Image 1 (cartoon, helix red, strand yellow):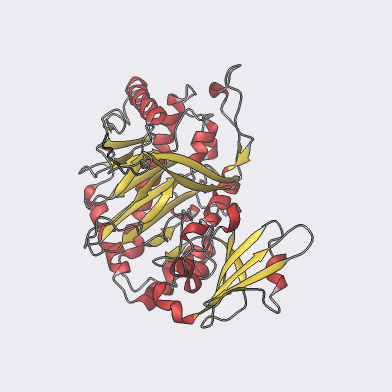
Image 2 (cartoon, rainbow, N blue to C red):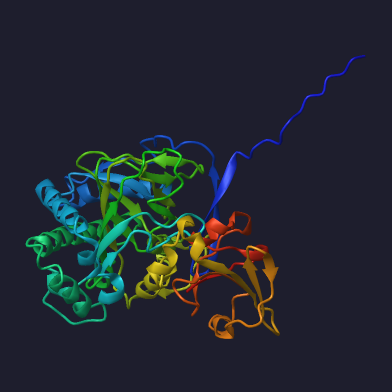
Length: 464
């Protein structure tokens, strides 16, 4: 009998994973392969806020809708939010004017000069997810300043950023309307965010004013983002901002009509969170998920800008007073649902998360495959319990160098493996920067822009 041989290939898994860095270590989420789909109205509803300033019954009705959305995907749109469209357009005009400046003017207010996460971050200066590419965006950030909070008199408190904000405004004074317009836009969003926090209290079966005493001087950050245009390649892997969850309690996002925001559903599918004219996108942050004992969902999301034109977005992040130590809410605990989290202050939580996405030296990480001729080698330092060993990679293969900077090892004694790029142009004084990826993607070119994960252990890139 004749036989026929049929060659088969192993089936491709229907799922991949996305890994998130947290202060407690990496956390993985399963993700279904395929193009993002349109969300259902249950997954991302549009909630009308026109009765936000109405009576208690009206506010309770809104809170009921918010509760359903927060327990589902944790994302929803709001319409009739009360922020004038004219003001939004003015703010957009001002941030375009800022980003369209020559680089030297933007660098005058860079975050490393202004401090406290205020000011300018350049393209590629952050990597919010170290398993993905560097964030292809530039930002201008404002932090809370009691002097512009219209709810009370100026108070110099734990959350004051007077020095940093003055530094930024002084060096952008040539942009005539930049400060007044962005300040007013900040104030309107702060006012709306505080009203939303009251609705969240109702949604969690708490008195409406339950959180009022801990949002008097909140951790409230406004970020204005420019995602540069690309070549239009729909398969481009470069993220505008990588997969992540938001840090604080709640985020209010204005986005232009370009699209690009993707939200991970409860069914492990990417949702295409297309912009809807006249709305803001609201989403739950990590801290509110903690307080709700995981009833409310802080959902993974990311941005791709795969069009040739720029994309602009203006998120506003509200957290509680940074010194307020909060614990899981009493209405979210019972015999079957004990508290999942220990008490922590919102400020400590925020700062620990922000540092995960920071890069000490943007010049060191903006290397690309075009810089290969400057590469001296890849240094992998193994730190066993007793002694340190170093292996040096060059075009001729692996070898153990005659000497290496043991101080680089001592600077992070809890890390078992270092992976690093040593660049002749930038010198050889290495310092560690958390930046791990998998070894199987650690080609020479990738190493220039990313780092590696050696033998399954989390590594650290050494930028020089």
